Image (cartoon, rainbow, N blue to C red; front, side):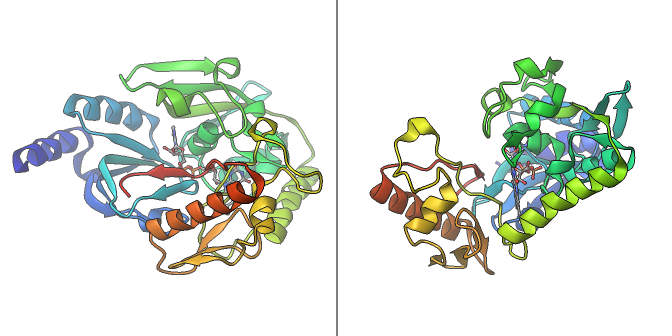
Length: 314
Ligand SMILES: Cc1cc2nc3c(=O)[nH]c(=O)nc-3n(C[C@H](O)[C@H](O)[C@H](O)COP(=O)(O)OP(=O)(O)OC[C@H]3O[C@@H](n4cnc5c(N)ncnc54)[C@H](O)[C@@H]3O)c2cc1C
C-alpha cells in the first residue's frame, strides 16, 4: 500500500513537480462548502496539464476527477480518491470576427465580462452563473430558457486515453442539463462560442438584468450548489394544471421549504436550492435531497432527478 502510494507520488511529481499536493480539503473549493479531501490535487489553468493528467493517471490506474468552480457538485464526506484536477483561469481569444475561444478553466463570468468589454453579444444572459467554461459545457448551463450549448460552435476535448479532438456543436449531444461528455467521460480543454457585434451599454444592461433576476430569486448569501433537481419533463408524468413544471414549485407545494437535516436547509427563497447554514455534511444534504424527492413523488407521482453531481465517497 505504502509502495503504491510512493509510486503515485513519484510519478505525479515527475509530471507536475511540486504543484501536486496530497490530501487537500475540498470543502472550501466548492460553493456548497461540504465534503472530504482529495487524495491528490493539481490546480492548473493550462489545458495541456489536463491531457498530461489523463495520461499519467491512466498509466497509474489512478482515478481522475476534474473540477472547475465546484458550483454544481456535492463532494462526499469520504472525499475523492485519486487525483482531482481543478481547472482555474486560462486564455480567451478572438476567433475570426464572430467567434471567441475560452479555455476550460475560464470562469463563465470572466468570459461574459471579456465579451461585453469588446462589444460582443451573445453570452450576457449567463452573467452571474458561477463556475467555469468546462463545467458549463459539461452541464450545458441554462438560464432564462436558453442553454449555453446554443452558443457553442466547437469544443476541444480529451478522451480518457489522452486523445485530443475538436468536436463541432452538432456532435456535442447538448440537451437540457446534458452534453455528450457526461456519458463519454471526455474532458473539456476549451470551447468556442458564436458572438455578434453589440453595443456595450446594451450588453451591460442585459447582464445586469440577469444578475438582478438572480438576486431576486436565489439565496445568493448562502452556500449552495444552485438548483438541486432538474425540472421535470412532460414524459416524467402529468401534473395538475395549476402546478408549474418546476422542481422548485413542486418542493414548495409539498411544504418542504425550510425543512432541515443537520446544517442543510431547503431555502425559503427558492425551493430548489438547499443551503448550507453552517457545518452541513454531505450526508445532511443527501438526506434532505431524499426527503424532497420522496415528498414530491408521494404527492405528485413524479420522481425528481438531480441536476447536482455527486463526487467521491459518501
Ligand atoms: C448560486 C448558484 C446559481 C447557479 N445558477 C445556475 C444557472 O443559472 N444555470 C445553470 O445551468 N447552473 C447554475 N448553477 C450551477 C453551476 O453554476 C453550473 O452548473 C456551472 O456550469 C458548473 O460549473 P463548475 O465549473 O462550477 O463545475 P463543477 O461544479 O466544478 O463541476 C460540475 C461537473 O462538471 C464537470 N467538469 C468541470 N470542469 C470540466 C471540464 N473541464 N471538462 C469536463 N467536465 C468538467 C465536473 O467533473 C462535474 O461533473 C448555479 C450554481 C450556484 C451555486
